[in-house]
Length: 429
Figure (cartoon, rainbow, N blue to C red):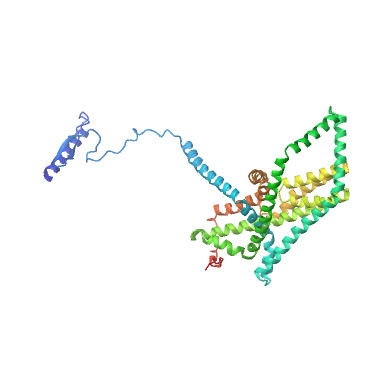
């Protein structure tokens, strides 16, 4: 039987070759050998679905239709669903951070303060101080400075509150006289509007009481956050590097060196940013405070402290603090003094943007002004004032770390991190 099958296959191939040479031959004269279940072969005419050796023919390119989806649309769809997945992950992360904001916010505040105080603690350690003593010393120095500023602001504000209240009242009366003299508004209409506002406050006293209770709960959260931030700051100053090495040890071994180098560069950027911002804020506060004192504006020291705190929020913070100083000068000293304070504030902001920040930050923090404005706007939208406070340093650190990771293969490989120095896990017996 195998011999007969081979003979039939040979004859079929000869007929196929003859048909290919004969232009007048039928196109379907080819045959294939089909094996039945009883293993007996027989010949069937080929309907075009098999080659001469019994296998399926190769597809004809001319018969295959073109892809109806344009390549550009296909690429756009691929990017779109990936962007949707990443956006959903970021949204879920923000929701999670919102739930644990009482913990996340103090940790971020401690990180920013550690960037400001860590160089001093490192200097003490190099001088031979124990790490715990150096961390405690810098923690006391930082807390003392912040507490001193707050005490000074509260004391000065309390001492000058009565005078400022009288001046604000006089200023409101002057505004009312100006409005009634130059606009079609009578004093009776102004008094009616004030009475309506007072009645609204009385009608919504239950809501205001609930808001006061919420404020009390918020005060409790603030106190808890301050304690947690100080506790975290101490360990960041004492064991910051070992804590980071523990996280690096969780990463794959091949990526530890590049991850550690990216974090080092981001940390140097954060240190440079916080240090330069503090120095710029101090210069702004001193200059504006001196100007307010010379002009005779009340509460000059609290307003200068407000300028110092507002300078930590680039562009927007300085603008708001300067606006408060101008308004106080307008109410207490008149329009001429307000214009002088406005000129001083604008001059200080120009000095800050064109001289101090480029000179102090240099090449350590390179963020385009458009990126600064957009990041602050996004921070305000997501997390309010705190979001605006951390938006710029976050963008600066991500920019430095992301740029390095994208070009990590262009330079030599950084040294491997000593993950053995990581803090030992706590063992509970």
